[in-house]
Length: 304
Ligand SMILES: NC(=O)c1ccc[n+]([C@@H]2O[C@H](COP(=O)([O-])OP(=O)(O)OC[C@H]3O[C@@H](n4cnc5c(N)ncnc54)[C@H](O)[C@@H]3O)[C@@H](O)[C@H]2O)c1
Image 1 (cartoon, helix red, strand yellow):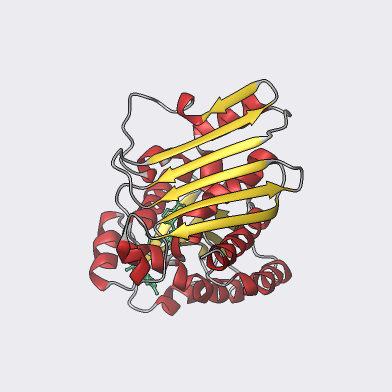
Image 2: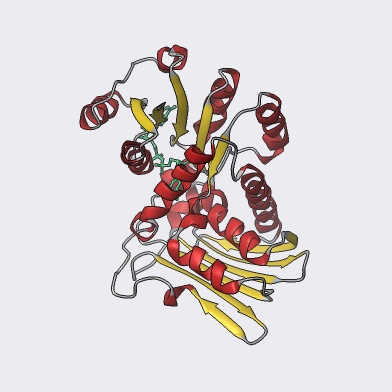
């Protein structure tokens, strides 16, 4: 039995709590949040322990697995502690806010032989897995990805690294996955057209990004923090004599109000795979996505 603790108990953290309860090999032993009322409430809900001081949980040698679901601003802090204590780590995306420190972090993870999974759960969404299967070995020449959110919060976006890290991370990774390649050229244009509040916090609400990949696949992203149609997320893959459209792979009868409804099962599948393998998964993919976020941000700033 792998005893575990979830750090950060808002929507995403609570999804992980519920999933750890469902996995036979894991026991949710602790939850931790800096908000005292929340950690008490959630520990009662999931019938597990909590502590006022995180270091007390860390010192319990029986707790092997930690899920980091606190804001991205705190990831580096928890990663360093957990690496030093040689824990198994599931880290929500993005890995940290600082792409320049990512290589050092990777070296520490590898040197200490840490089992880590970066939460690129979109790769486990049934519809996207199905698209990958149908695609087989065919080469994608053009990818179009649209993501518009219906209820985004500017403070949350900023805490989680802004438009490209918070929203873009999954989509940059999916583009790498479907194209079987990585970008060699990136042009990003970003504004705060739909939500002025983003401008005030030095973040963007809208962006158009074009990339050319090393295998010459061209990718076009449209991101927005506004959508009147619920959570709008669509991926189209074009190649010689084929088009795969994600809208045909999702259940059309459901109006997905938000991403966590659309991708509900993917969180459990990703965590389950990590736990069953008990070795690192999605680390290099996460690092790649993180570096792309950084390049996109630089391009957006340059093209202002
Ligand atoms: N995989 C996905 O699809 C997905 C979706 C949304 C968010 N995320 C990621 O999950 C993480 C959490 O995002 P969120 O939007 O739920 O964050 P959030 O800002 O809503 O906060 C998460 C929780 O962490 C708590 N917290 C804040 N500082 C803390 C600290 N120092 N120690 C412990 N707890 C602390 C807060 O009280 C809150 O309850 C982020 O890294 C985000 O990018 C992933």
